[in-house]
Length: 470
Image (cartoon, rainbow, N blue to C red; front, side, top):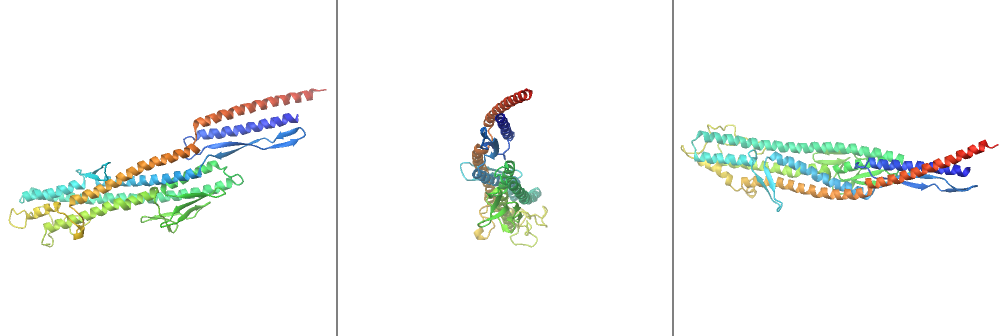
């Protein structure tokens, strides 16, 4: 009877083991579309044999669950995700800046140059319309309607400068808001990673690697954090991760150590810090957003300020060559894109087309000629080249920056896809493979069930015979 009891126990252990394996496969299939999930594998282990009076007997079967995860590929995925996110953030901000400029900017795929095309709502069209109105006034110096057109076009020009500057300022304000929001999200993720570290260490005490679901959650948080900023992750013997980020200059700073957030993040005036240490972020959406704002967008604003200053100075010099007090065309103190404005004394009634007798067009001609004047910063001017050339270059620069960002996003997305597919080949769930495993475990379960039923029937019959014997 002891042999039958042993067989019954072995069959029961097998039923339990196969049932656990089926549960693992079911969990894999359920998470086939979960990007943070890594395939779980049931591992069967024999508990060994013991010698009894009836001969050697098995101690049964046990099942452990492990993940098919590669720390190297995980780190590579995080690195590529950080690069992709950084380029995407730059692309988004540059798209906003180009929209704020209001010009059609096209880039040639065969060269590094970009070309801007004036639109009715763009600054280029307003500049042309302003100087054209003076040309018309030069041709009709006594025409009151021509004078009214000059003042009207000048007002449109100053409004356009101011509006574009406000739009670009809003783009930069949005970038600061995104950076601040990103830091808040990063700190939340850091706290979540620290909490999961503690839970994993507690769960895996004496059974390393068993907290598979918690590890999946942590990897998901790490990859979200990597999309915000570049990080390096190392795991200790207790299964806890240490997360570090590059410091400004050289070295690194610890963000999470085991179950503690060592240095929470902060952001101020374009600088990200961890604790009291300034960070040197070269990738991630935080760095990408700030880099575009402080780089291409700020360069555009600075260029527009220089352009506005040059227009104000050159036009005032041509319109009021004797520098008569109160006789300027533009307000001499408004020398930025955000402050350019007409002189407070200027009206269409007192607008001067010439300084001599009626019909003199010398002033209107001088102002109109400003459009074709070549300036040089080496000579003390605010810009180099003509007004149209300088503005075209400024507009083209933002278009080229966006074109570069578009290419970087496309190329880097392809690289990230390749690395992610490599990891998926190791840790991803294959439905075909899981269905094959499921059939294997189901067959084994059915066989164990039949064995259990057979042994149980034999024991029942034996017990019945023993109890009915005289």
